[in-house]
Image (cartoon, rainbow, N blue to C red):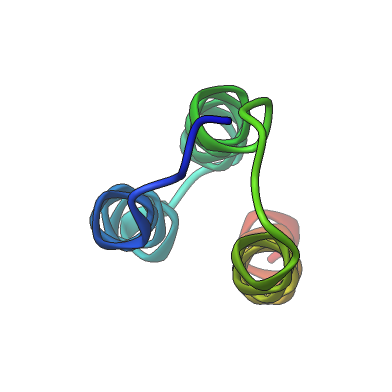
Length: 80
C-alpha cells in the first residue's frame, strides 16, 4: 500500500491556497479550481489511510470555503 507523504500534501495544498487567495478575476478563480483538481488527482487517488483521508478531506473543505468566499468577492466587484 502506498502511503501519502502528508508533508508533501500540505506543501502542495498551500500552493493551491496561495493561488486561490491571489485570484482577482473569474478566469483566475477558474485556474485556481483547476489547480485544486490537479492537487486532488495527485494526492487523493492514491491508497491512503483513514487518518490521511481525514486530513485530506479537511483540506478539501478548507479549499471550498476559501473558493466560495473568493468567488463572491470577485463576482461582487465584477457586478459593480
